[in-house]
Image (cartoon, rainbow, N blue to C red):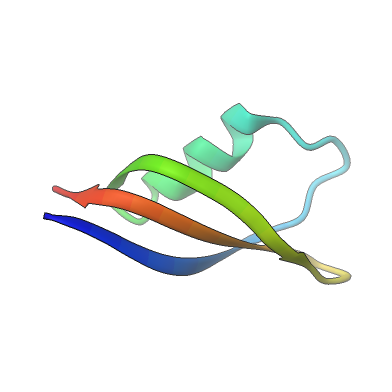
Length: 53
């Protein structure tokens, strides 16, 4: 089943797609597509479409 949800991950000094994908893997998901939709002082807010494992 493919789902779309919002996730928040901690902000880093240098933004790398591998960092985001590693952080998303901690939620036990397999991301198909993701986008940063907001940035706060401490977090990135992402909308993620993923296949539920």
